[in-house]
Length: 131
Image (cartoon, rainbow, N blue to C red; front, side, top):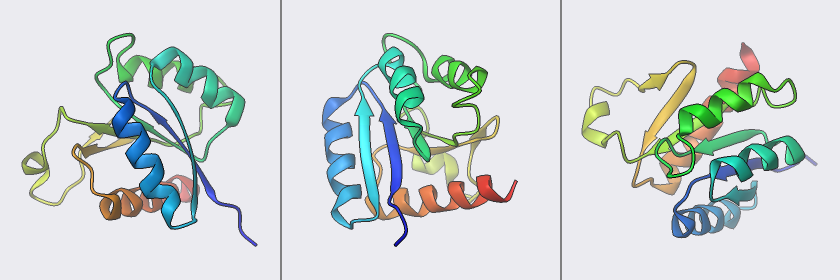
């Protein structure tokens, strides 16, 4: 039997973390853990080695880009794909159906719909495993 996809959420909005965790775990395909600040997220990523990280760009303690840079500098976490989930990009900004990216990381606008989030997680994991 295939293992669940392990997802790490790093976002300072605890309510968002909680609801995304519950919604993803509902279908039984995901194990979800979360951290509510960048420093804890970096440590948790190293300890848990998730399959994918959902990362907010705007957090008070450490911007998402800095968290991503720290993760990519660590050999243990360097190859974990990152999906930015942020309010800094609106759905209208992505209306032409081309996903926006920062570097090699996809961006998904908040508020996030569970179905779209699952589709993006699967897409990012598929693309990261083929490269």
